[in-house]
Image (cartoon, rainbow, N blue to C red; front, side, top):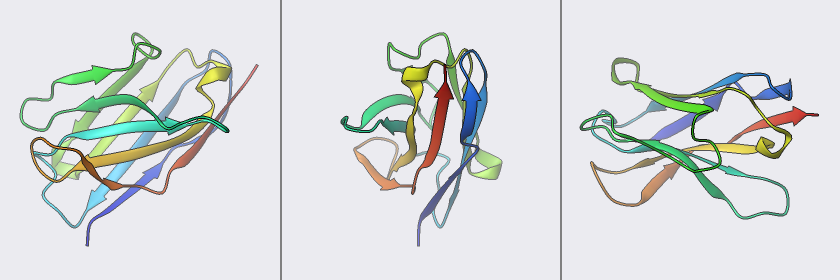
Length: 119
């Protein structure tokens, strides 16, 4: 049974930093694409960042480029999202997601972790 468990969310002042973690279990994730998404109140869920398993290529939404960094530790089946220079508009529930293979759509999702950035 595949599980993704996020942690590291919290309340931070604007300009501050947080690091989110997503621990994966129940599958072989080293080759999967792992991604982070977020959903703010009253808004659609949006893509934040992704990292491929086969070559660790990374992809970012324009809104977070230069401020957020996605990384992974395949030995620990864990993906991270380092968030710097946080803004109030980054406030959202952040979700970790995984594909079921080296490519494809996101299939597995975590339960989410709340990030709140105060001004």
